[in-house]
Image (cartoon, rainbow, N blue to C red; front, side):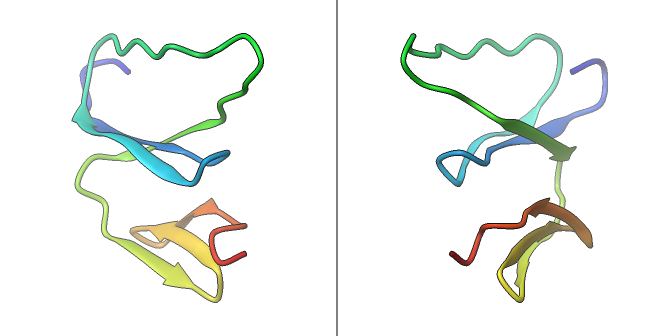
Length: 66
């Protein structure tokens, strides 16, 4: 992550996994699963724009509304 805080969104399960984290973050991933992690600046304002999850105006998940 580095020194800037981020929010981590899991787009496969469509879930916010962590908010406001920085430095090293560890995730357990089962052998028969997958994760697609999206990092957004911590404190972003999240909204749904025609089925697209947006983080302060930037697209995070294009399948949010489906």
